[in-house]
Length: 321
Image: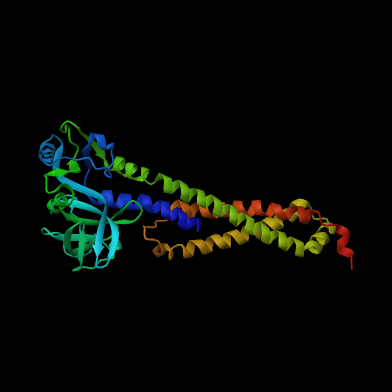
């Protein structure tokens, strides 16, 4: 479970990287009072995008409308989605994995986690759409699926059709932008999105610590019961001259073997349990590297519980009836 917890935290970073990087931009231009967050509601005129496109250093610019926490209705079911309004054929318009890309109004390309198939009807707010394509790994804020629609549809959905946008994305770095706007890198956008999940990350990390403590107590209990059953064995070893250090070594070896076997088992099953969660699960390579070391540490600490029982064995008990 500790590996899965690491995978959940890694999933937050992975989905943010997939979604932001998938736009294909080098820089994002947002309203200055958005404080770098695309999850806000600050807007600016679409006409500013043309000014940005003419800025020195920019080779291409595209408008975006990002509407978060929208309610989509699919048949009798409702779900929370994020809506990205994109200029068809420009940056932000996703490459589909099935179906076809956006080609006009009333169409939507949905992430597979939305659970809708190509050809399905979906209603966002009061606007009906038809699913024409699907994408993978396009989610935000812990697995909420993204729906891509045309820019005009997103403006109609969010702004009553007014020519407003929430962001502009560029290829190249703009030397100047209109007053009231600020330029941010992909990394800055990702960091700000992850900051929205800092509470969840902290809770998961705390849960990982608790899980390791529980694991240590379980291993310690197993070793203590084993030590109770091996009192005469320890007495014989002491009678033959074994030191306390040697007894500790045997207990530590037993504990380390148990925890390493458990770690190996966890590494295998963690690859098959990601589907149990609605959000992406991406176990970082560092977690696989550190797990055996942590397991050894837990084993050594746990073996200390049984050490007193082993070293306290009376050598005379080896000759008792």
